[in-house]
Every structure is written in structure tokens, then in C-alpha cells.
Image (cartoon, rainbow, N blue to C red; front, side):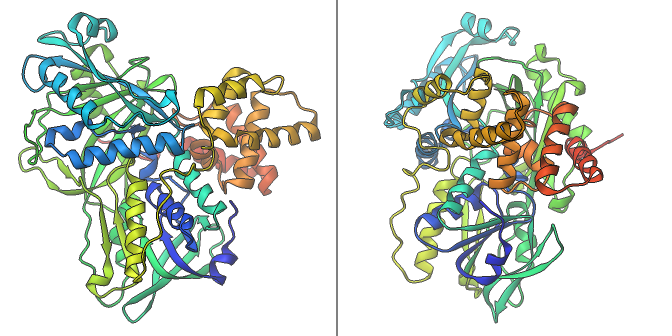
Length: 561
């Protein structure tokens, strides 16, 4: 995957995608796989905004039972299975435990029925050959067993627990990157740090975009038969570039916050309810509380999600100390043994999601629940589509539908989609446990089992590419095979093959180094010096890059007195 801006100016593409998050990445892969010429540009780094802010959960849709939304359940179940199939190194089963209270909607009987319905609706979930990806039936456990698994859980009215399985993405930033790698291998031209600044138009017809290379300041025009806007929170800003007819799409936003903290639970993800008022006007039953999710993550816990109204510009997003304290208070109220304090927070994720309005009773945002594919030709603006995505899990499915619409807008019959059965970059693995064991058995001398596991879980079947960089580096410098040597190989691979431009790209998105907090200073220095050799950085630039990484988790904070 090479950053070639000259290609972007030379070609007229079938499709140009604005935005390199999970939705843009999936559309780039889907369209390339169906034979279209594709370009994609991202104004920052790939998956560096909303797609980097998630609880890392690939939902099977159990929560949709609350609204009896069986169609969305089926979509989620199908896409969870698809991701197991095409990205087996990144997506893995996750056990989830929800304590049950009383005998109402939070009770053992109601949750037992919900699990039975979920198992029935997902009866085809285990059609994959890989047993490691199988999802067991849900079951209820006794109050005593629940207390043993979740020591200190509030026991007033506790009747038991509901135990079921969902899925977790091991590295949520590498998933969109893998889709983009696959698209590039299929012929797509993708580039990060290229910001769109306006549309190219012939009358009301959109024919491409005017763009700026953030790294050099150079301007370029990129032309295409159709432009798809997958810019997420920047949707309104991008549509503001239009001249002539005004689009009907306007997307209000909500701020979502997740925290990475010291570990609360080791084995199970846990769903608990706070007493904060939270209502859903479309729900069959409103529970009068906010559901919080705590999942094991890199030896820590990832906790969320809190939502607030956001009416400012997307670029001005701040996670305040008040936001953090509010979420900590909710967790501590729902699970008192947590006793989380601000100093227990290792990393803060903040992102923006589409909302439909504001709850008149609570003042909280009402989140958009359904994706939307807007063909602006219906408004007299041909050549432009906008995608509003609401769920990480179903991005591939939305991409398939968007490309179907694209062909139909050209008056063509869409070719059959095969993205649900085609492994993405790193995903050429039949049985994950067997693949992992083979990799461990054949690992180079000097590499620890922990290091090899990390390589397999991040890069899957592409992990030999890292070993090639490692071997080349060892051959030149006669360095020992240790963790720093492997990190150096990962950094070299990230720069040469994955378009990493900054140290933050490597720390937070190409590797797992920064997934649970900023790494130790000697690690940062080692990675920065490796990038400096590759990219010709000065000593001043090295220090600037290191400081930028250190500030990533701080710059979102605005102290509120």
C-alpha cells in the first residue's frame, strides 16, 4: 500500500471515497472487489477518528430484542459470522455476563427467555468450519455463581446471571486498515493526510473533489464518475462544499466516551446498569437506567459508553474532566468495588456519532439507529452519495448495499458481491488455533511466545511480512532477536507497506503499542528513531513526534472547574 498522489491526479475513477474510517474502508474493498476503479482519501490517518473510538465489541444484536427488531438482529448475527470468516485473526468470541435482578425485565426469567430467543434467531451462527469461532448457547446461572464470578456485585435482589457470547475485535484500528490493504491489492489508490476542500462540479453534477496534501501543502484535483461521502462527523461540512442545490441531509451529533482503566474483570465482559435515567421512546419496555459495558482489554478494562449532545465543530471535539468523572461515577455506583478514580484511567476514547434528537425527559441524545444511504441525484445533485453509518459491526453489509446502489444509479446490474466470503489482508486462515500453534512451533529462535502471539493476532496470515523485515534488519546490523528488534521490524513495515507518516500512526494504529495507553519512553524513542531512518527526520522532528504521542491522550481534555 503506497501513497501515490500522482496517480490520484492522472486518473478518472469510477468511485472516489471521502473518509478512511471503517465505512470508507469497507466500501473501497467492496467496490474494488467488484471491478471498479477506486480512490480513497482521508484527511488524517486511516481509522483515526470515530472508528478508533469503540468498545471493541462486534455485536450479535441481542440488545435489539428490547425493540423486537429481529431484522437488525439477523443483520448483526450474519455480519459477526462474516467477520469471523474474513478476519479470523482480529475477531474472536467474547463471553459476556449480565447479573439479573428481581423477576421483571432485569430478572432471570426474562433474560433466560431472551437468550433462548437469541439462540433460535442465531441458529446458523456456527456454520463456520473453525471451532474457535463457534458461539455457545446462552444460559442463566445462579446468584451464588454470579457472585463468585463477579465478587462484590450488588446483591440486593440478585437472582442470578445471564451468560452468553458475543465477539471482540482484537485491534479495532487494524480492521479498517486490513480492508484498505485488500482494496489496494485489488488496485485501489488510497492516501492518508489528503484533505478534501471542495467539490469539482459541472453544473449540479459532482465530478470529483479539490484536495490538499496535508504533508506538503500542495493542491490537487481528483476526478471520478461518482463520489461517496463517508466522512462521518464531517458529513455536514463536506456537503457544505456543494454549489447550487442544497442537500437535505443534516446530521446532528452526539459525543461518545469510553475509558480504558485498571482491570476490573479478567475473563468476562460484564453488562451492568446504573440508576441514571435513560429512556428509549421506541422500546417496548424502558428500563429506566443506563446500561454500561466493561470488557477485558490488554490486561485492563475498557468501559463505556456515555453520550452527550455535541453541537460544536467535529474538529473541536474535547473530552472534559467532567465527562470522565461522570462515567466513573456511573461505574462506581453500578459496581461499588470498582472504586475507580481519575488516576485509574489509562486512556480515553472520544468520538462523535449521529443522533436523531434529544430526550425531552433526560436531555440526553437519542442516537441514530439505522444506517442511511443518500443518493443526492434525487435532489438534483448527481454524482454524489452520502453514507451515514451507525454500527461498526455492519459496515461491510452497508458497503455491499451502497455499491449495489452505485451500479443501479448508473443503470447497470450490480455484479454479485463476494466480500462476505473473501478473506481480507491477513485473514487467509482456515482454523485459527491450528494456525497459531503452527506459527508458535515455527517461530524464529529468540522470539518469545508472547511476541509471536501478538504478531499473529495483529497481522494474521501476513505476519511473515514482519519477519522478513526482522530478518533483513538482523542481517544488516547483527542485532539480537528481542522485542525491540521485532518492534523495529513492525515500524519499518508500517512505513514501507502501510503508509504510516507519523509516530502516532505507528503507536496508535499500526501496532498495539498505544491501545491501552502511551508506551514507555524508551519504546517511543526506539520507534521514533526507526522512523527517522526511514523518513529522514531530524533530531528536532524526532522530539516533536514523541511529544505529539505523549499529548494524544491529553489534548482532548478540557478542565472544567
